[in-house]
Figure 1 (cartoon, rainbow, N blue to C red):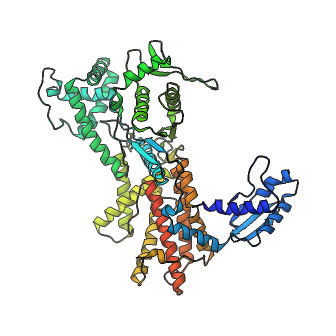
Figure 2 (cartoon, rainbow, N blue to C red; figure 1 turned 90 degrees about the horizontal axis):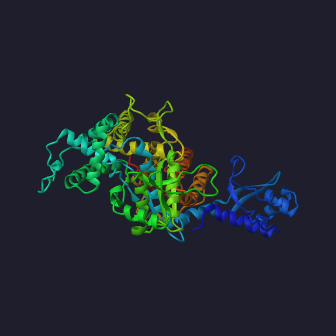
Figure 3 (cartoon, rainbow, N blue to C red; figure 1 turned 120 degrees about the horizontal axis):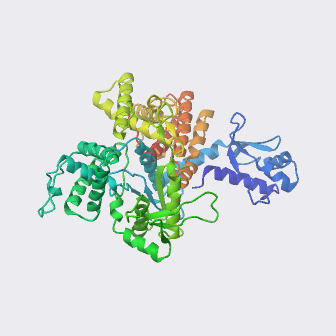
Length: 596
């Protein structure tokens, strides 16, 4: 199904050509139509006469007038006006708009066209470290990545989401040593032990999360302790039985907790792989880089040059192994690319991290391409996101100045939402909590996703949980309002069982027409959000759609409409609006309750 603006631009292009004005020298089509930047004057506009004036050596207003004449009997436009200095002001035909929305209602995915060549996309958007709690910095990668995954799937692509855990570096050695300091008698540290290890872990998730920061701090203050942590890391990575068994306990306990926290944000990964999964690929990859003449020794370390002739700033080599032979983050990231290409053959790999890692990913991507780890046609895309800041504009902290745990942030948002739900609505405690949880998640996710990913934003719990303004709760309130009207329609004897038989008529008023025009932009928006991996475009669309609906609601008699055909048409419009809104919030990662 064609996009709405393509249809009306096509009608305009035919008129330009009929008037004798084809493409410009640059090959651009003059009939491109856009939304009006002066909605008080018209609904859409076309500036093609301005662009064609030079080639055709005519005043723009003359060209515009001739084109307008060709559109006098158009079935697409109800009004075409040429105005100085050469703009075409346009109003759309209500019947044409009604036909388009009718087709949207009947079509799968509201007529969104499937891609001609669906892509296989892998998204790396977890990045959590085992044995460490998730903090507020993990919020953005999780919710942006989850939304991009859902948007691209909806658009027709195959998408695989990977948690990509940090589970193999020095932090593992620090945790193991911390456990040994607390419980030296554990059988895991007895080199002579040959029996089966206990099935139950010797620690809880809370204890595990205490051990890492304490052990990390001690390693910074005590060089001998750090050396022992490095030795523990070496034992783990070389396969010492007890250390591997203890590590497996750490993995089981941590992943179970991570799934719980991520799950509370409606974030789900298809793969729970980590750095450890590619440990055996690293020697092969390093040898391949050496054999290909890419890697060489510099100051004791193994590096690959990634500088290009077009670089205007310094580009350091990509280090593969340190002088002591130890691998680095980029070593495991490169090996992960190698594994992903072998196992999944993706057309695109998307990474989400803090925007300050731009140089790092530039080096890794260049190295992967230069050394042949990826096919030339495979796209490597990095999305760097901004920080979550407090009202003081600095990175978000707890009241005592510490790093805010993500679990606590979610809980505080839920409590604030529950307070507001209790204040304004009569509900049982159980129902209030259930609704508050759903609305709180909408507040968190929408508050993040409505910002362009690369920008920092201020976490303002009062604004994010408001039922007014550009917020998740406002969007949900709009959906619930629609559901409430539909429920009353059924109570009054109406039926939604065969909703496809409810005929959508042309708009009876300006507010209704504005709502219908807003709905018509769904396909173009979703296609753009997918191509650009941009959830904020979905947010902007549904905010405008919610505003258009609420204006329509206040201006229109819906259930009090006496003409039955007109009432059914309004109900059909409500159903389409509800379904489009619910589709959009689903790809953003949250759902709407039945009532609020």
